[in-house]
Length: 57
Image (cartoon, rainbow, N blue to C red; front, top):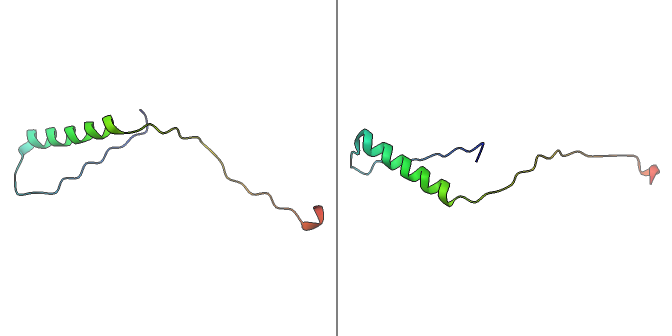
């Protein structure tokens, strides 16, 4: 994989996890996302428009 960003957001549920707990929670969440992600091929494209007078038809 390349050019990948994983964002994990945790809502505080009243339980303090501490540093080690947060690292484990965020790491586990990111690992699950990466394991279950599908692969998509992205092709670089460029959009352009060609216009010419009606008399050329």
